[in-house]
Length: 289
Image (cartoon, rainbow, N blue to C red; front, side, top):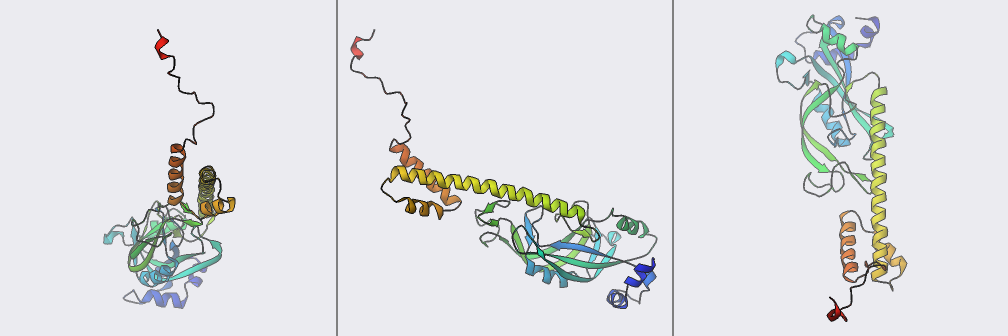
């Protein structure tokens, strides 16, 4: 063990590790590292942990074993969490809004011949990404707060300023964490450098921002069309009233109103083009040969 690592493994850390060992462990017997278990950012499955839930999960993850690829075999038990806490980054905003926060876990494993290769892979950045196994009591829509699947909001879309995803809250259990190849959460992994992860999250945020802008343009176009149809059908109505009516409508209501107005305008003959061919007269039909 290098000198820096020996000095970094202080008495408090050894005491906390000792809670899970049958005998006091010496610094040279232990290898420690930290991982970002999970955060409150929207993940690849369009889910996000509620910020308050992270604090409850921090307590539940202390003492939880780390394995490989979420297997339940004792052969794959490699590490254990001896401390866990929430770290906040108030200057960084999540896609849902609000300050970014993540769960940081301090882990240990034994320096045995069997673990030597895994330790080298962790130090070399090969074994880095992690994923958690936990059970949550609630999963709600981020837009309306209803149980996931009970509303019509589509995950991955913006509704006004709100990004739709499933918010996980009320943790019931935290039973394992694993090294994996592709985690659901983009930044979950051994903590050292965030350069690559930051690039990925910035690219994702940029793509979502462009999607939001496109969505807003489409919604604005529908509002303009509603105002135009209302002007045609109700010419005596003041422009301010028309603008207020279309401005207060959102999402599905906008589409319903537009379709209804289009149907009424079509029935009223307002969609007939000025250059449309007139129906042939039947006055001289008896002279046709």
